[in-house]
Length: 63
Image (cartoon, rainbow, N blue to C red; front, side, top):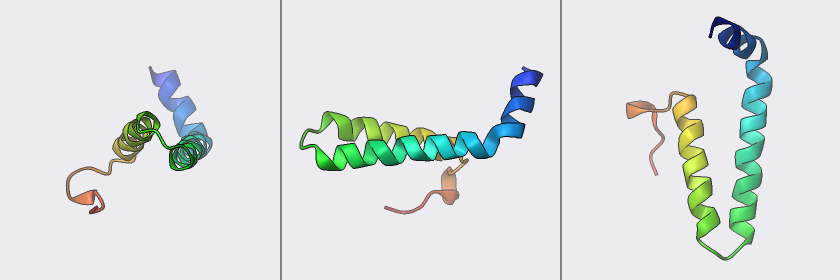
């Protein structure tokens, strides 16, 4: 476990960049396609990224 945390700390900028890119591409796909199933997936992915970014409680942005 310590090795995983060390790796993450050394590569966190790249990991965050990849996660941001994945959510961005998924959002574009959800916007360009008319069905609701991909929109739900993007919403779930956004929630996971927000949780990872510790955007909880009063730190959440209002909708």
